[in-house]
Length: 274
Ligand SMILES: Cc1ncc(COP(=O)(O)O)c(C=O)c1O
Image (cartoon, rainbow, N blue to C red; front, side, top):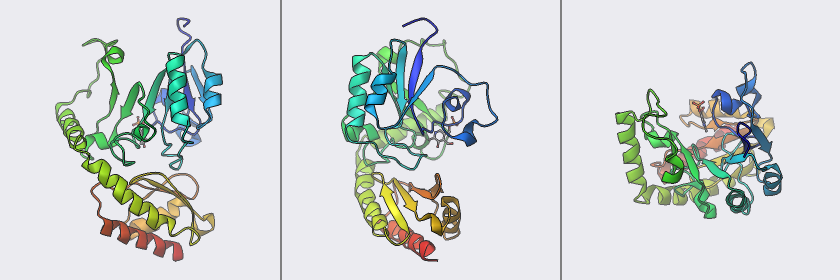
């Protein structure tokens, strides 16, 4: 690798937050417009296309950063051979595979990590959100010691990094996940949620995507934007975030019950009918 010429390959239509390096390669204009200066060194390839990834990797590529399932874009699930192919390419070309599992990780899809669905182990996981148990802000970069070991104690500080309360909560979340109970709940109740949502296809719903307690639902645009529908749902006590256009993202708490799912889907069906 040429010193100072490193590049990182990223996937089109990603969402990795709003820090300056991240929005440097964001396809989302609302996150980029009016900001800058941007960080160079990123190459964007279509999500789900391993041939494009192979073409983009050169001798200066150090990492491939991707969401195994693209969340903010509408819960877009890649072809089944994509993650295994990306893993092989990263191994063959000595490129770090970085799985951004901020939304998809920690049992959301019925697996501990979405990568598990395809039996893929990346070199790094980026985690957040649920890691703080919904109580404290907490994020983490997780990797083996041979990767993390390049930073020595005291070399890379952070004001809030290692915050004792947040770290204690994160450790508890990880301990809870070792029991497998939440992954199983997410898989079982998620199958129920997806069944109930798919039953609305033809009655205002065009498509349902995702796994576990995570569903991207495309609504007929004639019925309103995702934002408008999510506000109508909020009036009924159902919190569902819109993504782009007329797509909604259902991501209920992993402790939700089957009865609560049924109630929420009835509210959704009523809103679509109204
Ligand atoms: C998936 C995801 N990543 C990152 C962020 C925010 O990241 P940051 O606080 O680094 O901008 C959000 C929320 O805005 C998010 O939904």
